[in-house]
Length: 143
Image (cartoon, one colour):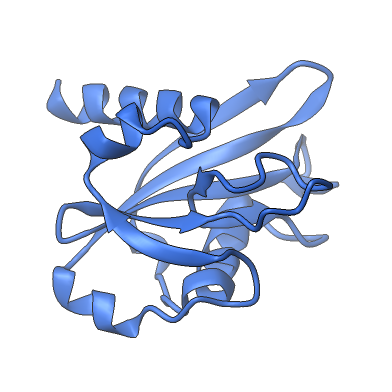
């Protein structure tokens, strides 16, 4: 369990990482013991003790895609409450397409790719509650 501001416990954090306008997504490993095996995922994961949500998402993105973010890169955040579970924080960041050259897949996942947001939203292997967070972000950004 991680604690944000010594008050709110959270489980982890995820990032909608736009690179030149497209999402960087990771095809999860196809192991039956993990949630959403073989589905398209956003970078992020469980928090380490003592981390803030921002520290968690920055660390996880670097571990999974070798992309180093600064706190100022995070342009949006929203918490996802979950029934009988600790919440997960969702973030969005927009980086230049040139930074795609920095991506190297870490130890988790089968592969990564850039995907248009609309393609992710319609993809049969998009994690449904992640697609909903993406819809919310895109709607807020357009409004």
